[in-house]
Image (cartoon, rainbow, N blue to C red; front, side):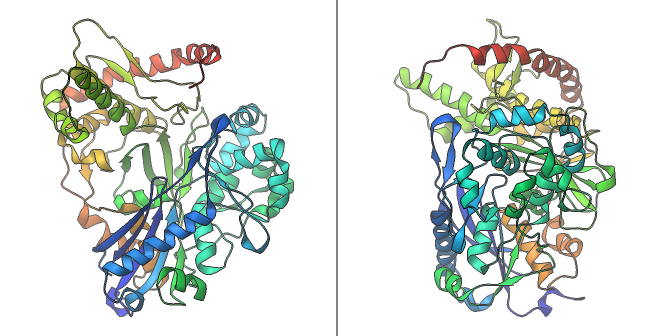
Length: 526
């Protein structure tokens, strides 16, 4: 449909983003302005052997509650809504059996039980060919490796399953009664990013040829919608028959809503949250496949356009750790400082310390690292520490470690970006933005979009219901105007980080056998 987006009836599009920590329902008007939002904390459980699981039933109940809460904030939401889109946490395995009932709790992307299977599959002679089809390295997060591990260790789960879904797919099933997945998760796990379809060679490399029946149909959500069922309408407070879009995975949707794809050449987008997600949009035939076989290639809802992705297992979790360390020391001396008060001191600490005084490798997660290399044994470390360094130096080193880890990720995707768009909580700090800008030696622009993942999903729904003729037109209205002015990198700091980066990378490569030896040592159980 050409012309004004107001040519569609109604004036609200809802985006649902079911993340790892919270499920959000966000309402937008047809110009892309956020009207209001409702959130429900997510709940998952940790268990033995690296298990991290989540109840399927509870996840849908929480999603429905978030939508009802949104309805209590926006007058006449049910009658005003013209479309609903759903995205959610990526990877993981949500098995569904007879009568669309869960087989058991979902294995989340945080679940580490498949580590032995990842190691076995990565050593296979078929793995490089699999990587060149999917563009995606193996790790414990993925449904492919989790299914392969289940087949080897818990075949009864697969025997009772009729379909293997992801988080957003499960919610979509409950909202529409339709079993489906989207081109992004289908192709980076089981397919070819060029065709956006399943690939039998990939399934064979994973040892899952006989489990192909578990893979649901692939639906392009920017073109096809399914009506909200009567049961789902009752549960959510919305109107039966509202078109529902199955959006792409949340990583892609967050970058989509924050500016990874606006038509500007060599721009990239990083989401600096608890984890770090670094993405650049390229044409499928321009994808750079690194020799190490790591990262993701995730399609975007635009023909021939994909994102190359590298993800740090921990980003601001490192900063949380070093600030918490300071809090604990102060508490020992009877002084209480809140997390917010510690965050407020960051700019001052950066101002009185020198760039590059220490190196910090930000592998603070107990699951190790997954981008730009995969090693469950990787651990964080300071390098170059001496008696002259202060706590402020440690804080700066941690922040610089986030920047150098970002550079490490982009280097694994080819050349450095010419412009970097950033979103996430860390983007609010001007001093931190300057470190990130200098680390990749590129101007930084901050997206003012509050809920980028939900907005990315809603863009797909807006196009699907013909409120906009294509995603590019919608992006020009919803995304580009919310990008702030470019903030140029400091030339002196950029040169320092360029030199430090070579040592940073050599250090982490040299640590690989040492991390392995440390992991093999006896450890007391907590």
